[in-house]
Image: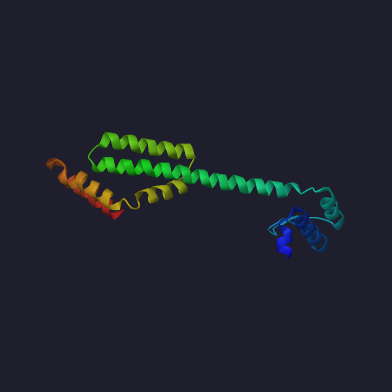
Length: 164
């Protein structure tokens, strides 16, 4: 019954006031501790409808964090699309087009203002699912289409990619 009342503004304010009078702690709708308050202050907040600035700041910060996460997800999807196109162009033996796709992918990273830790996660996720395509492209680049004069050198480079 108390949870049902907390869904209304007056019920929520009454519950927060009652908790504050009994414990000296002002809580929000989710029962998170917001601020210490005297019983007089709690009654004043109930009568006037005022909330501590920290409560408003908390709501604003949570909203900002949610929007930031949604934005990062959107940018990562664009990044992965461009990376996949680049991998496909590499596999189709079109390095100029692949470079354009990879450049656009890097543009999404710059636009998203991604830090290095998050960038490594994005790169790992972009490569995931494309392992066989990446392996085939590496095989064709280092082994199948390699010039005879560079075969040994490229074979060592290919072995390096397999160890990573």
